[in-house]
Length: 193
Image 1 (cartoon, rainbow, N blue to C red):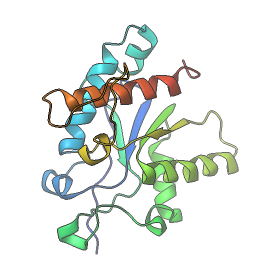
Image 2 (image 1 turned 180 degrees about the vertical axis):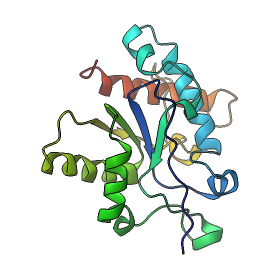
Image 3 (image 1 turned 45 degrees about the horizontal axis):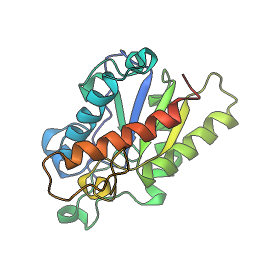
Image 4 (image 1 turned 120 degrees about the vertical axis):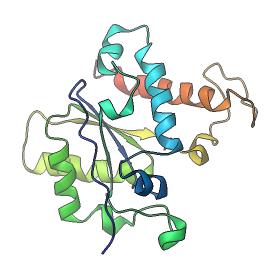
């Protein structure tokens, strides 16, 4: 039977939830979601957001600690290359009705779900449809246009928020890329604030 890592319920300090693709090797070792570099990048992103000039944004992101927020995955099944030759869940895995019901219930008291990466985006669309079909109101708003926070995905961002080229290997390159993700997120949030 496939190993699963449960979601992090958070501390109820924010109506925001984060969704990623699936747990990997670092999560398996730690026994909790978003434990490796992706988790460190989420903390950095939260640090950027918690210092935003807009008080409404700071209210949504009051903590720099990722585990203060609800965090889940499109699939709760562990995947990594040495285990099963992949680091991503299959579409049939995250679109399974039992999995969608799991996500639906995890988002019970959430107002905004921020999906990072393609699998989280697709799962978000399916869960949003479930809310629509059940005519549940209020229902969470899903933000689905953000890249995953892994270094592989972040390294695809080649310009900083000012349009300057980001050199690879520069000490603050990841931070500059996360500033771009924060700006993308702010664009998506402006209609929700």
